[in-house]
Structures are given as structure tokens and as C-alpha cells.
Image (cartoon, rainbow, N blue to C red):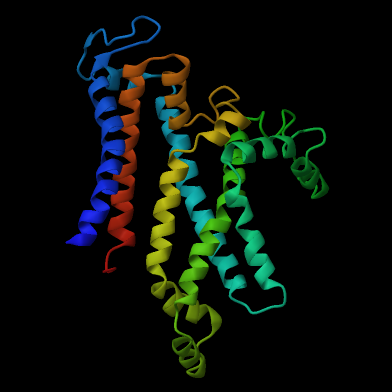
Amino acid sequence: MLPLLLIAPSVLLLTVLVAFPLVFSLRNSFYFWNLQMSPQPMGFIGLGNYRAAIEQSDFFEALRHTLEIALIGTAIEVAAGLAIAHLLAVRLVGIDVCRALLIMPTTIAPIVTGFLFRYMYDAQGGLIPWLIRTAHLPIPPQGLLGSETTALWAILFADIWQWTPFCAIVLYAGLLSVPDEIVEAARIDGAGGWTILWRMTLPLIRKPMAFVAALRMMQIFNLFDLVLVLTRGGPGSASRTLSYNLYQQGLVDFNIGLSSASTWMIVILVNILIALFAVFAFRDIV
């Protein structure tokens, strides 16, 4: 009983801090409220804000972009993180230094990462265009951030660079929990590396894999910082996401009612995605 009493104040404070913004936005999502017109809500309009958010010309395009980078980005980061985790598990000279350096990208603020990659994507002197030209690969005349075909993927690449190390560290911790005796017994029985990976290692680290995949999916779905710094949703609306739409509605147009409705639409979409993910990823995990 005493432990519950000791943590009760913290739990209560966190509950209030989370619940108040959600209730505030839910209530105002049913009102017409634009700060450019009035400091107070101007009237109850029911589902009008939700209808307006869906009927915007770029809503479904932003939804498609968000789903693409969330699903593809999560898959790449978890797969690359698993590969790096296996390399970290190898006992080589200097591997401890590599482990320490690996976590550094995740300590950088996303807004700083955005500025870093903005210079690296520069068409004239940027490192990444130079590497692409060195490999004799084509680059759009408008640059990687100025082309409709590459802008969104350039943003995703920056996110992959920053957060793949996080996935690697979590999965490396999972690999350390795999008993050496089981792996050694499989090798004695003649199992190869791929067989051990697919039949033994992956099932045994399903929990950390499912955790890191769900976490990264939620974070990429709400990706905003890199979009703001690198492209501002452009060129045109080629890299616009739902989170950038929300920023435009609330902090540029000051439409509190519309941005509140968009917030709840994002909350609902994320919960649906995570619920579907949990059905497949967390089943049989107790």
C-alpha cells in the first residue's frame, strides 16, 4: 500500500497533464474558433471541423505521405537496427567505442538534425549529392529537397540516420538476453546462421522488436521537425504530412477548432494502426 501512496502524486500529476489538453482539444473540435476572428469560440458546429479537415484538398495526400514514411521508415529502421545489433554482439577490438558512438545521433535534437541534413543536401556543395554523383546516380535538377519525387524520401533518410541507432541499442539489449546455451546447442545440432536467426533469435527477441517497432511507428507518424526545417511540406505539397497540416492550421492560420479536430483524427488513426500492429505483433506474447 505504501508504494502506491508514494507514486500516487506523480501519477495524478501526469494524468492531469495528459488529460487536460486532450479534453480541451476534444471540446474545441466541435466549435468554430479562429483566433484571427475572436479570442473565444464563436459557436457549436458539431462535426463541421472534422468534415472541413477531411474535405481539404491535401488531406488524403498528407495521409498517404504519413502512412508511407511511417510504415516504410519503421521497417527500415528495425531491420537495419537488428543488423547493427548483431554486429555489436561480435566481440571485436574497439567495439565498446562503437557502441558509445552509435547512440550519439539520438542525442541530437530533431530540429538540429534537420539543419544538418539541409546543408548536406545542398545541391552545390552538399555531401550527399556529391556521394550520389560519385556513384554515377542521377540527381533531380531541382535538388533532392526541391524535387517532388525525392523530397519526402530525403526527409525519411534523415530520420532513419537519427533513429536507427536507437533501434539497434534496444535490439542489442534483446540479443544479450538470448541464452548462449540455446544458440550453442543449435550449432552443435548443425543449424546454420540464418536458421538460428529465424528459428531461435527472432522469436526470443519478439518483445523488444515489437516494442521498438510500435514506438517508432508512432513517432514517425507524428514527424514534424524535419518536415518544417527541410521542405516545409514542399515542393508544393509533395512532402506534406498530417502533423505539418496540423501546424499550418493551428500556428499559422490560428484555426483552433480545425486544428483540434485534426489532432483527434491523428490520435484515432495512430490508435487504429497500433491496435492492428498489436494484433499481429503481440499475439502469443504474454
